[in-house]
Image (cartoon, rainbow, N blue to C red):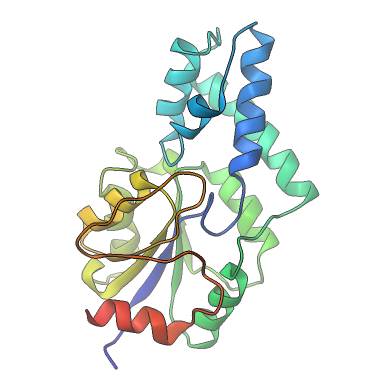
Length: 217
């Protein structure tokens, strides 16, 4: 079986179903400034760097705060919700545990910022992730390849020897551009077929052997 160097996990919408938390936080923040934020507005930001999302909340939602302040408010809201309940995506904890049992390094690659990523990692089983790349620690966020290139570099492995797991077009574009074999699990927004991308309806029932086959293609 072809060697699989690492599994690179997106967080929001892939590992955990935090997208509804983000939507609620956005709606609440925009409402404070008497703006309107629709479901389509929220969906358009899925997978985006948080500062890019903050720009949209300012221009489309009328949020009269500086971008860093917008991000801070959103993070506070989502972290509070995560503390109450960590909503795993179906099949994600089982696949993560299978990777850990097989001693395949897992890296979280998220456009959420460090403090939210750490809150999720702290709620996951100990030793699930060897490291993480977050949106506030890269120069160019998804769909740029930088986050996935940084994840592979952190382990000293070739991105082509890694499998990335993503739920959004933005994240998929980032992983494919980095050269990763990519498993797409569309959640709140559709993901179009692309070379190097395998689409599935769910992670339920998938294991390390399935990820190794993706790497071998």
